[in-house]
Image (cartoon, rainbow, N blue to C red):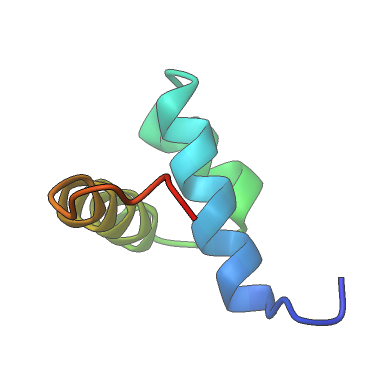
Length: 62
């Protein structure tokens, strides 16, 4: 995946793990963070970005 950064992959993984119902401890262990606050940050950013994107009309039509 040449156009992907490690940060972006970690961000995407956090969102998918949260959507799957994983706990913060589980997300932290997969993401490799030492502090659970970082996992919470990634998970919150994902929720915020999805909420913002859902406000754009016709976002799924290209």
